[in-house]
Amino acid sequence: MSAKKKTGNPAQATTREADTAPEVKLIPIYVMGKRYEVPEGLTLMKAMEHAGYKFIRGCGCRGGTCGACGTVYRKPGDYRLQVALACQKTVEPGMHVSQVPFFPANRAAFEFDELTGAPEEVFRLYPELFRCVACNACTKACPQGIEVMDAVSALKQGNVAAAAETAFECIQCGLCTSRCFGELMQYHMFQLARRMYGARIAPRARHLAAMTEAIAGGRYDECLEELRGMGEDELKKLYQEREVEPVTAGEGWTPEDETYL
Amino acid sequence: MQLAYYPGCTLKTKARNLEEPAVASLEALGLELEEMDRWNCCGAVYSLADDDLIHQVAPVRNLIRAKERGKDRLVVLCSFCFNALKRANLLMSGDAAKRDTLNTFMDEEPDYSGEVRVLHLLELLRDEIGWEALKKKVKLPLRGLKLAPYYGCTLLRPREVAIDDVENPTILQDFLAALGAIPVDFPESTRCCGSYQVVSDPGDIPGYARDILNPAVRRGAGGLVLTCPLCDYDLGKGQEELVKNEESGGVPLFYFTQLLALALGLDPAVCHFELNYGDPEALLREKGLLSPEGTPQKTGGKA
Image 1 (cartoon, rainbow over the protein chains, first blue to last red):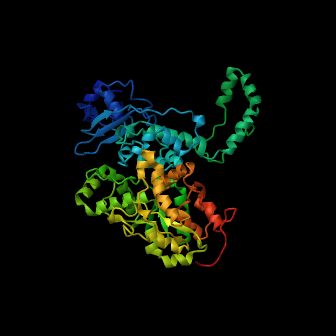
Image 2: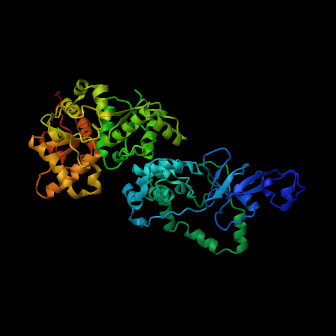
Image 3: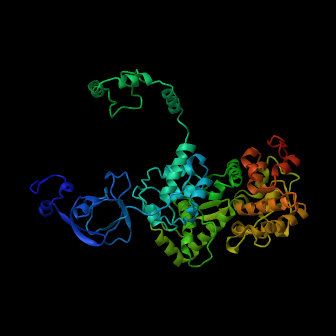
């Protein structure tokens, strides 16, 4: 990375030299109320790091899936509070930013084996569900674009499956919970709904059960034993020469060697 | 017809015996209702505090959903939902200042000013189909069934949302007569069941039930006809206490929609009588309206 480099990703321009390079435009943002000049095109997370912050919390996968870097911001001239994952959203001039990497929420304790998937179990574990007044602040606060209030409504309606499906993309960042007027802990409720749905409501995959049984019955014992007996070089060779499913393969794809199917 | 149907949370959980016979009956009657695919709690209890607008957000949002779908009428089954939704609708059509506040608050929704009409299913049957036409559609007249219509509060009060005369309603009597049953008038038909007071403090639950059930039975009713899941809960739970104390032998409690489905000749399984208080199936069998196996008797003729 060098200041002389004309092109290249501005997100990489984090050195001192890059700050002053004429080709990198700097824009002002406010992190927790303090003004910083940061290179255009950076994510909020990189911009904060550029400004000198070091994340020991509030930063996880940097790929928009772990939910650790929930962030709220406002733009000049807009009353609306907006949300983003700091690792995904790029900086805009004049925005005020604060991370909300964690928001206190209690997860109900339960023995999953004792749960049947009945909506009454959700009602019992999270009775505050019924404090929802449908203000919709949760939906507005979701960086995943989930209709959070609809999922809450589905739970109130006893429709665990609809709640689980509506909130399937939840990454549990907690921003909905931070904004809830009724002090609900949506992301924990949704996790419970998804678990109930997966284990008790969704139809079982019969072919999976059959395969599991076959494996338990020793279907692959012999070839695993064979692998166990191989030396490192032989294993490496086998691995490197293996037949790989093409990225574009459709559902009907099968390997040429069908010995292990 | 541009009719939307709002189910309500209780109908999807505890009161499936109110909803499922209604949905089946409406289909049998050829009424095209479209169940809303997005809806939230109706608000349950209409807030009486004049400036408590946050509790109007839930019902108004449902009205907006109906309008968004291009519906001009919203049909409701549950009395409590009906009351909350219709009153919120009146607020939105009649109070410009509160309407503006609510529309401004719900900035993610289109503005709403009371364009959708809120109707109870009984109104739809009376005004859209008519009692005479309904009578003609009856396949199993409920002959010999003497039933006391119990209105409770929320279909009739306050006056501006009432589906009938506040003091002397007849809509349920007319409905029962159209199905071939014998309506039994009793003065307590509009007395309060105890409402949420009973849920939060079940102290005198048998007292509320006694004051409503006994007068109906004294006037010869073999059962009560209800429209509201909360009335059903209060009278049902109260009755269980009365039976336990050997004060009463138990009175069957019906939802009006179950009687509709039965009279239209639909499969009684859709009525979910197993969720009812007071064993209505025994009464129906006694009157020859349900076979011992639970299938309807085919009597053919009209009332």
